[in-house]
Length: 529
Image 1 (cartoon, rainbow, N blue to C red):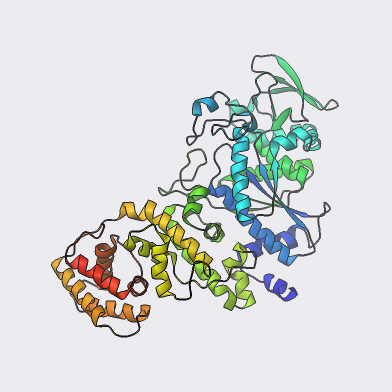
Image 2: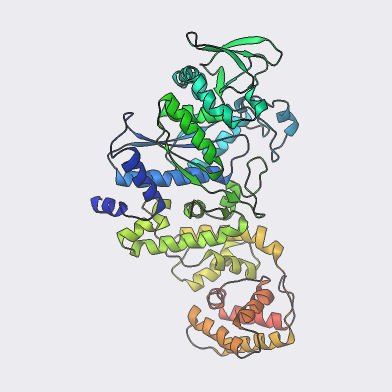
């Protein structure tokens, strides 16, 4: 293990780079006074959970595991903190029963009725959605609810410290606000005892000895309330800083769009007497139109969407790759990520230890990737489903078992799951977009030539040998180039503009079956039937 630790000191994988910076620069190689290193992720449950939220947890976990390899004698913890005491500012676009929710605008999310009717509040519903995903990944985390921590007194001491440093905090915040907002701004947001709403109202007096503030209510009356016990919550930049200070957070990621907020919260944290956590600013995810993914709009993918069509490890790989680069996150990125994940886990056992630490599979699987031969790529499975026109796994396994005799659903559980995912992906995304076309006269001649070559072929039907046949046939006919020939095969035989390596596809589907498919295309039959 010590040799592996030495290799981790020089690994170029970004989680190890982050972990080394945390250990060497922030902690100076020492265990914090609180006895552990605290990693935190934050979640704003005003809308349904989306992949960006979970990406933060996945990535933070990767840094945590890298840190634990570098410093095994320093305990670590990870808090997943939900800002569920925030007032609901608007009704999300992608929920049922919007009228029900609209009646409770301004109230803490844990006081807004659940529009789905499954939990005691909207905040509890979204928290449960988040936790279900985290649990499905097997994350080691501690869930923290802002509502519970505020009301239990967990933030009381920090809130009183905010009261003491009120003027210094205002001096930091006011220059960042517009003139109108400056008139009402306070780091404290009282929770109205009459309406239950979180109020953005001016504080007219602070009573340090009593630990209270006096604010002007919306009806003009003056109200005194404690800053402890959940009677108030903090504006989010002050809230973030207070949380870092109160909990002693050592590491927290955030999106690139929050860089100014990180800087402001860092200043407030220092005013309180704390040290802001090490931060990684990651790039944002974009939908299919190149727009930022939004919880309230519900554009892009949900976690459930991805997991309907691919294993969670492929989603973890998407999160691992280039966190500081904006990436398009839509359904069509799923197959590539599945295939890349398969490649990484297949390579892992034969790599040198230093290369294993740089392999994404180490970070996805905490150093212990599963071992299973990647018999087939996800892309070629999609094409098998496509040409078979079936949603029956048994039919697909008939072809797979012939192609890879040692593979069975029991012996190749990863492959068996991929077959199910491929069926779902084909049904929802491939089949609706298929557009078969008839072959031209010149193309018919080429297809007939290919069918004849396959009929006369007597060697071992390997993917390489079959690919050579396809190449040679393409060269004999007046296609503009071989790319055009392969595109013809995809459009005529598979109903799509792109497709698999044809040799691999024929080897999987079967030579005789491919000959029959070619003859149907030559005869002008409807291959979509």
